[in-house]
Amino acid sequence: MDNSYYKKKIEELEREIKARFVSNEEPIEALILNLLHRRSTALIRAPRGLGKSTLMLLLLKGVYGDKYVVISGASEVRRGEVVGRLHIPSLEREGIEKVVWSEFVKTQGKGLDEANRLNPYTAASIYHMLQFGEVWAYSQKLKVGDYTLIANENPHDQTTFVHPPPFYDRFDICVYLSSLSFSEKFILEDILDKYDGDLVGSMPQVLTPEELAEIRREIERVEIDVEIKGLINLLVRDLQACIRGREYSEIKPPTLCEGCHFMREICSRIREGPSERATIVLTNLVKAKVWLSGNIDVGEILKMSLWVFPHRLVLSSGTNALGELQDILYREEQKMTEREARRQWFILNRLYREFSRDLYNKAKEIALEDLVFAEEIIRLEEKWLKEGKIREEEMLRNYILPR
Amino acid sequence: MEFLEKKAKRAHVRFKSPRKVAWYEEETDVKTAPTEFLEMYYLGLFPGDTVIMSKSTARELEDRLKKLEEENKRLKEINDLLKAGIIGLILMLVVLFLVQRGI
Image 1 (cartoon, chains in turn yellow, cyan):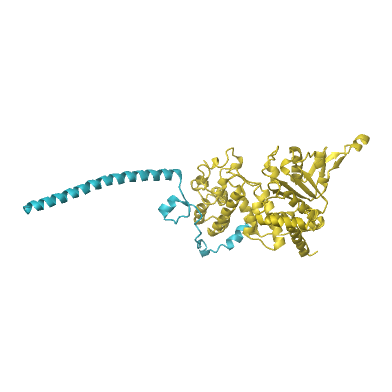
Image 2 (cartoon, helix red, strand yellow; image 1 turned 90 degrees about the vertical axis):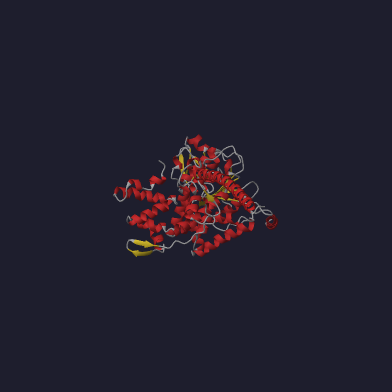
């Protein structure tokens, strides 16, 4: 089938959701883009009463009709409901441990309401499913196919259990909903009147799971430009890199940054950087956007970063404030422009091909301004040292690596 | 490597010879970028909105300011003495002039 048919379906899904959900256009666009790759997971964060559960249900209903399962973290969820339970008649009559797998595991459309209230056992089962694409119960394993998991939570909710960062890392994106302005409250009243107060019940199934699977297959085949791939890799690396190896250090920024050459750089504002999963998710989002619109620019990628990084970064200030992340990404944008102006990729390309004393000296100057570039030069220096092209005392590591 | 090749092709550099390259670096907007104090002072760089300095530079600057103030005070004292001397000499000249005229 022509892919313009599928694109129209996605546009229709967005239209139907926006017709029932006031404001928050950007989170809706993010959630729909994120739907378009296999094993899609998303987390909606908002204070109570802002419609995070409604938005989750609108998305699930728009794709899976009534065939979706929502587990509520606020209730007493047992493993039997999330993963599977023993089939008692088989055990009593035949002595066989037969597992009845839960609907949550078997169905493609999955919802997690108030995910931060899940008990650790349930969270661990879900984590295993997200990590390995399988579930275990009573020594039996079930492979889980493609799915869509949408979760929501209230970040201000003081819960009994705090989920570990790897649990949140399994969510591809995290979007924050904003409260309604004065005029938007009137719009909400009109919408509620229009749909007789039943926003979710009135939501039509726009796509079928088969159509979504076909879209996901098409997007998987989308090739993205090498410059875009480079930009994504740079963006993630800039947020990961630390010349003092913060990931293995017991002392963390900002204390770790005392006296560091890169103290004023972005790296000093990050206590824990993103995982490699951030690169994969950003690539998936970019592919989806290219499939949908035909192209993508730097600004859009930076906007997507605001959905990919908030739940994956721990900032030195101890907050996960979106405002600070926005500032970091603004500086990233400037950094990208400076890199182009300094012709550093040209210089690195020449240095990869052959050693040149002049370009090496220029590269060392640039490296003092750019940690990611410095890492590449330090790697090349090791090779040049073995080949006798440079002396140990002139190496860049002498200036920037801790002694 | 493919990324570097593509970026290098679009770097707009001129090859003066196989071993010499040149390019024009555009002026970037420094308004928002912080400027290092010493770079601004010694290299005459146009400063951004924020000027920063290290602890040791700040300490050195404080020392220099103190010394300059002491020097200033000392010079002011000398200046006052010289002013008093000039006034004294003027008075002496006036007195001598009057004595000579027999007034």
